[in-house]
Image 1 (cartoon, rainbow, N blue to C red):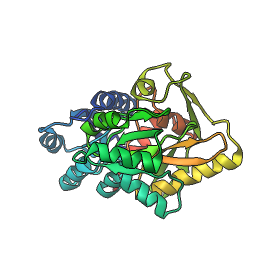
Image 2: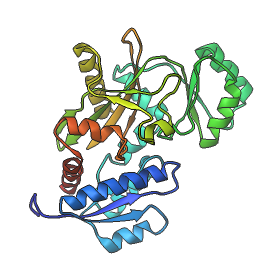
Image 3: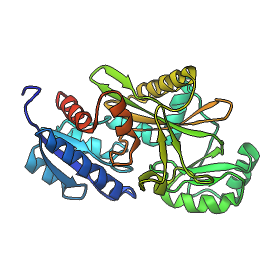
Image 4: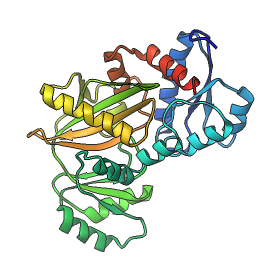
Length: 313
């Protein structure tokens, strides 16, 4: 198979995740771009019949256009490994580690990356005691995040304090939660593109939302509800620092192909790495394609490079 040979690509989409519709949107964009490049494609819904559909199709490569569990946490990656099919994105281990925010942060700390303190709360815990522990250790101003969700689903922010126990009750419906001190600052994001052993880091993008708003699910996927500043208006030194952290995070988690690191930067240029996404969105409002275009990979070229790179495996 030559570099120019059209590929048969299966694009996995949907599934039981709370981000299923975002996934289907990403899949539609990817399919259009791959077809423009001359590839044959089929979108396959992530359901109980997808393994049979994949075996029947026998694609050259699979593109998991999936967000959240089970498509981004190593589960689907394990299925594809058992089926012997090459696929875009990180392997089972990298996907699982990155999806669990607490485990990822432990690895970040081990590699000297800047993260804030945290407390993990399990659904079975006594919430009154957990709340008291949080207030004593982190203070009343906190951010509560489900450990294994993306797109800010289930996140509760208490920038002025408030009813931590009620916020925990809501977020814990989605599983264990990570509680961090609320840090006011500018939201930044940086993508990494890895083609074989060649790493390219995207420019720093700053995400701006209307006053007293934050980059929640609505502001991520509604056109015009957020502004992306690229390159971010930061010093060269800070830009280089953020890019190096994003690359180190990609490597220390054992990721491959693509990732996107999210940060908070305070008014004093203190940097906090929040998390790393292994299958960033590919919708018209998504950040990763914007950054890729800035390094010479407009969307069609980006998805073409990703499937060709994966097919070599």
